[in-house]
Image 1: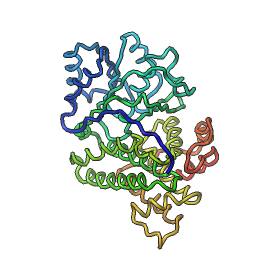
Image 2: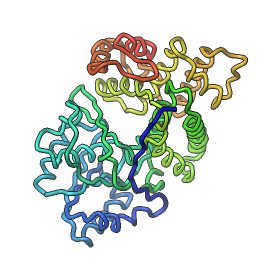
Image 3: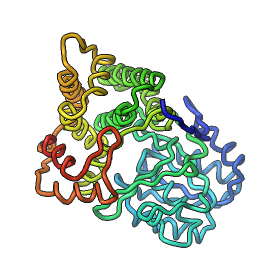
Image 4: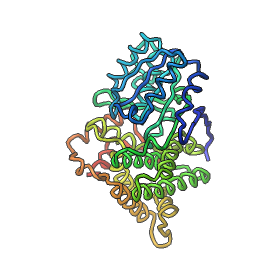
Length: 386
């Protein structure tokens, strides 16, 4: 078990009517000018918009908004909102929605106090002197960005991340009923995203990490159980609550304690979604099926452990390699059951851009900590994903 520091100051307000706490939360942070970031009119249908506007009116908070967020959020909108936020003297950014809205809000909170271009944080490794406070009302169960220290942003064909504890939201309001009307596809890609975050952390080369091993294994089991419940009854609010909480647990860095997560698969998927604008969760389904199949011949021990402990594959009957291949097939079946594609060919993607994506992914050096991946290895994984 390796040494670690853990810090996460996000306040979680979870459950029925949790959005009613917004006024008190904004008051406690002495907000004077708020920028609301969201995507589309669904927040009005859910009643969230009225809760926000009532709160800012009662607290006499200056209010501005943007409902222009799209999946795989881009630098162009962030730059526009940074400029708007500077003019309005914004001191608090509130995101409503899922990962795209939250990551947009985080980038805006970085950019408003900064004199340069906000892309500097994602591209040049610059760390901020100041970050505005951020709050979240989560309406999906997927990215876990509501309690994470990371943000992902796209600029043309580049998709890059930034990490700093100061972009962890001050609070996250999570009412599972806000997820109840999500289309089946959005629920499914969210579940895939949650599983991907758990797997990235599980695939560590640390051999003495029993506490987080068992915590992650339990979280994977809980995700499967509640995914099955939602497939049987999409209106099961308890299953939705479990999955929404799992999304945060999977990505608030608590499960990183004592281990070094891999993240190679995410870097590969970021190139796919940057190149083809595919949905991140479905991209992770494709990549993880291929990555596990590739790792069966390269370094199977962690995959074999998960196959035995979570999927019940007997280590006396199957070798590590065989168990790793069984894990890959189990993942494929699960994603298929969710209604997701599990190969690049199903997404209409061929091999023509493999070279450029592999080189872009490794522009800053090899990726992945379980097995270090150079451009050639990434291309092999992409070929396996066809």
